[in-house]
Image (cartoon, rainbow, N blue to C red; front, top):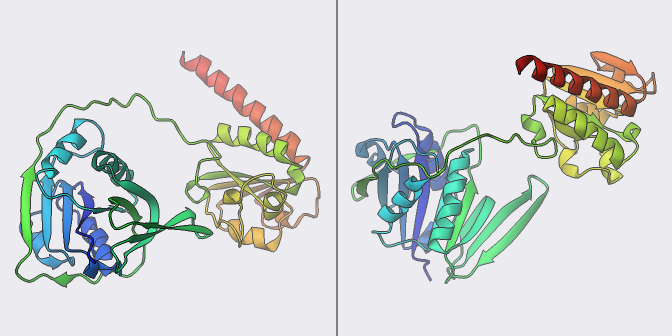
Length: 339
């Protein structure tokens, strides 16, 4: 039993940029059960490349729709205009959005699922069309730790936000022969409905440790959840991520997503501040590559002092409080000077 049509969506900012080939090439290489789909179509949106470039490679697809738009930001009337243009075609039962570290693709997929009245599956690491026409989707609940498997019925429309795997080898793109059908449409520039007034930065609880330039981390010496509340205030002042030792996580003071070490996150921050962390080998393995390490601990023989660039023998909670007060005072002075 086949599952009708599948559309695979990708965005192109620059016609000369070939990243879209990597995204679509990864899609072509994935064993997702293409033989159980009647028709596979590539949907390219944005500054689409010349048709001959698209038709020169095989993506395992029978057709492509090239939707040329002004610079695409996934907000405003542009989305509705694109959807109206695509509505002239037989719509798919399965839509796959190739999310290559681009929030706009995920945003577009969310809007598309609402417009199409389809189920939506986000953070998808893999998916497969089954012989009976059902869709099996694997989602990362917590990357590398917990996954959820969901099966959608053959009669359900499904929108999949697929996180493209990042591997070092280039995709094996094969040449396309005759028969690839290409349609090109142009969506005129329209006024935006949304004006961006300000960007709200993520809180220390939300900032991924792998992306943080500065990390404030706590261990046993923080002495409980209230100690991490103190560290979170400091991290907010420093615009830093919030980390933790395995002991703190095991005690339930903070979630596993903040754990640094062999069994947690390996980070490469420019500044790592360790409050009340003794420095077990598994923790040091996760933060040893940080550019500057500051350690605060009451034990002068704490192993973390062996790798620290600056060692402070003191009460970790009190040092965090005093640093927070000093930073807030400095921010107040700078604000007064600029008014």
